[in-house]
Image 1 (cartoon, rainbow, N blue to C red):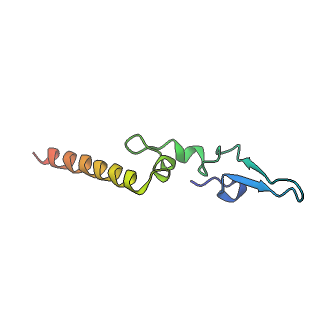
Image 2 (image 1 turned 90 degrees about the horizontal axis):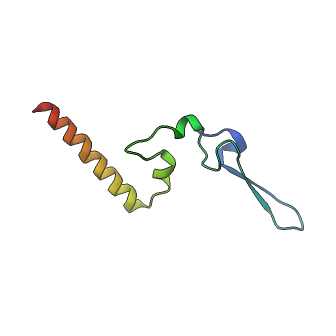
Image 3 (image 1 turned 90 degrees about the vertical axis):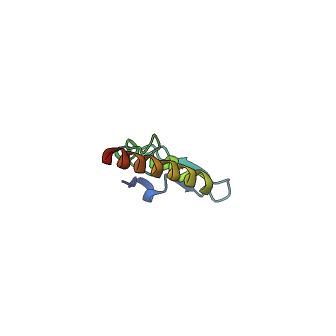
Length: 79
């Protein structure tokens, strides 16, 4: 699901020789580096971009809560 425009970077930097470089954002993915088809899928309300933007502690909390929910649903089905 990576955006194939601009080599999956989400942006491109143009070196203007004697001027400051110019950074342009991909119009296809809005700089998120993934295709729209990929971004529309979420897990517990978060897209892959949301998870990648989390700190390690935030991602850990997110995954612990998600794991807890999955385990609870599994055990409720057994009861």
